[in-house]
Image (spheres, rainbow, N blue to C red):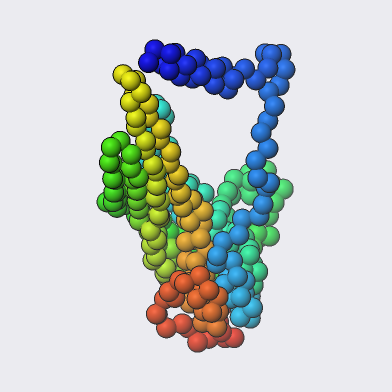
Length: 272
């Protein structure tokens, strides 16, 4: 039907014109207001806060490099980017501050301190030394084989697709005075995504009309990674302070706790 074809073309052009015609060039386009800003809260915040009540020995901790060692880049639209966030160290530092029971010194960017010492306005002896520091890497990003199913009868039918990726990381807690590794955490997590859709195709005379509807849901990769880093930080601190009394907070999110025995010296943590 030429009339149906012409109507569809005219509708497509009209929709495209409406999307671009936001106003005169000398005026600001109206901004769409999305959801409000909110604090970042992971399922493991309560476990980290619970563990903070067990620490009775003052300890100073800093965060070194936590590198993206996956070697995976995303190349699209002529650009190149990383799949994994490059701010993992900052996330761990935030987890330590939320822990609340240790003194956190900022070693994420020492350039300000170094510059002030070079200018002679800051004495090196006034800078708090680190008792322990956390380093590590995000070293696994595997895209697992997905699955799909589709049924089409007479041009009508549903479809379903599933995708998964495996992310893994290793963190280490090192004693600054001796460079001994006091605790390690090696964890991984599967990231899940799926899509469900429905397709209808019909001929009106000689004209094929297709309608395709789909819905997708995908776990937020970087938010899931933050949760992994918080959990790994919890593991390191629980081994350092010998605390397993907060396992119930991990059970709330159905996460297995390490089976390694915790250190018993909660009150008598040796000084570095």
